[in-house]
Structures are given as structure tokens and as C-alpha cells.
Image (tube, rainbow, N blue to C red; front, side, top):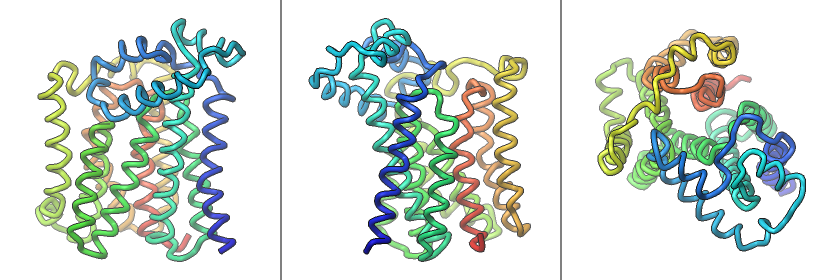
Length: 328
């Protein structure tokens, strides 16, 4: 009982401590002009951002609640910092980022722990907690860009993978239905949900050795993603439907953006460093190949100095590594 209580405390307070530090200890030197309803909407109602409707709705509704708490009447160093980052910024809006990111950080860590204790280090709580520690620190390290959808997307990614791995060992209509619903919600949040589909395809291909059989196994999850992805664009319009703007040339000449690309490559190298068996290496490589659309879109339409672009990719690589190499 005591050990389970310790696990609960670690899962809740470790990500919460990191969230407090990253939101209030390290005030963003990168994100600006998105800390009020007006300025936030001016950015997130256009371009590629307008399709990420779930996180936008959650943030605005949270601010609607927080704006009644009296936070916006406060005048302190934090409120002045918020106004420095956004002349129209409010404390309630900044705290809303913190609340959304903290809640989904805790939920994402909890699901990662469940994956670890059930599929990596079966029943070994100490190893699972150690995995959680590296997960929390690794995910938080590159989150210097304040957005409302990253931690939410990590939670959905982990939940899809947990349901998928559970479905593999225990065929269930309920599990499949829950996974399909989670994919829809994840895609309403951010298009990185496609990486969970790549994860499923990579594992199926490793175990079946047949690409057609592997694809057949993920037809329903892929359909859930594609219907939601293209449905959003049909409903909201296709302008900037795939790229916000073309940034490949900037990513290849800017020292900071090149540093971001190097960081992603180095992170992938570190995962491969711990590979002991060649079949794991093949699965990791297949996952990267199946994730190539996301990688190319990130290079051509993202700002690679935002190293968080590679975080969901690295999370899934680590999960594949731990899933097949349980002797750590």
C-alpha cells in the first residue's frame, strides 16, 4: 500500500514540480503575443493552428473560469512579465496555460507509467518509476515554447499506444472503440496523432513481416485519423492545410534551426545507442520511415529550433526500445 502511495505521489508531484519551474521559473524568452483571448485568437484562428481546435477550446474555457478569480487585478513581477511578453496579456490566461499543461502532463506521465509497469518492466515498480523520471525530464527539457497542445498530445499519444498494446494481447471491441475515439480526439488536438499510427504499423510489420497484413491491421485507426484530419480541413478550409509557411530554406541556413535539427538527430542516435538486438534496430528504422511524412512536414513547415517538434517522435522510439528490450 505504501509503495502504491509513493507511486501516486511521484506521478502527480514530479511533473507538477517541473511544470511550475518551466512556467514560472523560466519565463519564456521565445513565446510572445499569445497571452490574452484577443492575441491568442489572432494567431490560433488562422494557418495550421486553426485545426487544433480541442486544445484551443480547453485553454479558452479555462481562462473563462480563471478570469473570475481575481488574478487579473494583481500587479506583481509575474503580471508585468506577462504584459512584457504580450501588451494585452493577462495573468488568468497565463495561468490557464499552466493548468492545461500541468493536468495533461500528469495524465501523460500516468499513462506512460501504466505502459511501463504492464509492458516494459512487468510488475517492477522501481524500474517503472525510473523510466517515468527520465520521461518527465526528457519531455520538459525542450518545452520552452508555450503552447496549449503539446502536453495534451503527449497524453493522447501515450493513451493510444497503451490501448493498442492492450488490444494486441487482449482482443476487445471496447478497447478498439476506446482507441478509435482517442485517435479522433488526439487529431482534433494536433496532427501529431499520425505518429501513433506509424507506431502501430512499425510494431505490426515487425511481428507479421508482411506490409499488407500490417496495413490491414491498422485500417480502422488510420481511417479514424484520416477522416478527422481531412474533415477538419473540409470544415475549416484548406488554406494552410498542410504547412503554415515554407521554412526549409530557413531551417537549413539558420544556426539555431540547424542546432534544432542536430538535436533531433542526436536524440535519435542516443536511442539507437541502447539497441542490443538487430530486430529492435529494424523496428526503430521502420518507425522512422513510416513517420517520414511528419519529419518532412516539420523540416519544410516548422521552425526546427523548436526542438519540441522531435519530442513525440523520440517518445515513441523510446517506447519501442523499452517494449522489445525489457532487460534494462
